[in-house]
Image 1 (cartoon, one colour):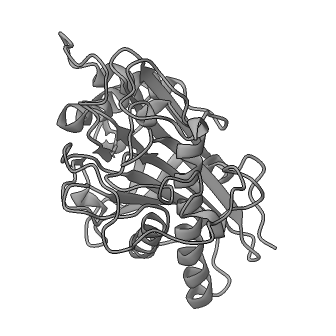
Image 2 (cartoon, one colour):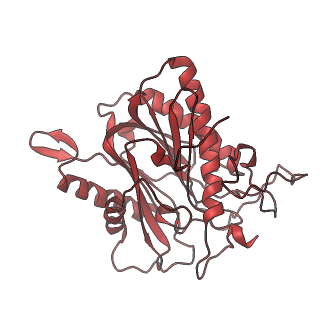
Length: 328
């Protein structure tokens, strides 16, 4: 039987830490995935409206294969500044790609749209550079789920979203973990019930143990909130398996199946759905063909669980535009 890592978080992949910073007044925040050492990373985008920084260098044909951190942030285009706060702080620590006597931290990032979620967006100064630096300072193996970090102001079609994470340990000994900010145009729950689309993949009762309904709503016209026209679910899939940048790209691609299993609909023209993949390289592949297949399948399953855990953990705040899962 599959089992989670000890924390059931992406930080069950040894050598990774996660930090969150939130602004409850603005209803937004930033999340940082930090490695004890640079790690191999890649990305795959399937949504129609992505917002990113430094993702071109993650292609397998580019020179730099490793990054110092990955950033998920609210704030739409304003939120890309969160990575600047992270990069400045890492440079002060002497981290980054060495060029002569200079160090340039490599910090790819992605943003989601949370500008009409009930928070006060009339800031005098863009808060995201500060939030990025605060999230880096907060980096730890343990962290909260739900309304925190990049998940602070997230919504779905029917409920408030949030930050989710999950992990699994494979028979090969490799650990796979997911981290995701769920701000989807689609719904994580089925119809008007409290039951999750991801229920077939739940381990124990990690997101309520409600199972599946006896019948399902008409599938061709799923619930959406088209009035907003801007959303995006952004995530990271990580492993301790030794992967090349090309293999990381394949794992990120497979992980998008987790979006489709847990959110209906997903990958829409109004979502910027994106997944980073990260490999610490601590544990070599025993059988490269079989192991990469199992890693990709695990990536999709763990991501689906992380999405449901995000919505399940969300708590209510003043002026929320939608209810939270516990209200069901």
